[in-house]
Length: 168
Image 1 (cartoon, one colour):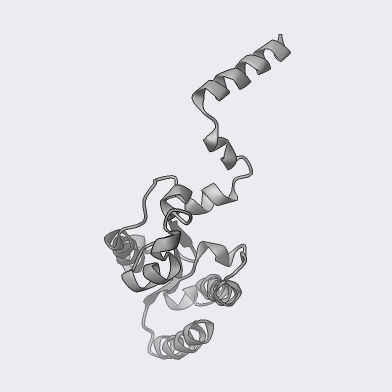
Image 2 (cartoon, rainbow, N blue to C red; image 1 turned 90 degrees about the horizontal axis):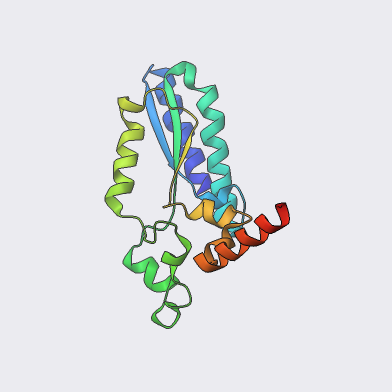
């Protein structure tokens, strides 16, 4: 993953720079490239490297008219991967929709639309950015108080009442 990105970027970049060709490079990273969670060390390490390439070369090669951006997609199911990651016996325990604020996985067309935009001239002033497209999954997992989502309306009312009493 990292080596392929590095060697291809270097080869294409040398050609583009030598021939004065403007380009838009779009890399795919992941939201865990920033955090490196458990069970994905090889992937997280490689994607962190791709993220570094994206941001470093966005600055270095902008003078040649070469832009670099990345997409950090959340869950966009494919049959092969999904069957291996979420076997039937674990589907209830590992319900990915429960982790996503929008309560659904991504549709491939949504990812394709974002990619098309980022390589188009419509995004000509976007450089060095990573766009997360995950229905809010990354933010939900990163929030210290996101567990409060499980609090019922009656419990919120009770909390509010206690706060009001204490403040008076």
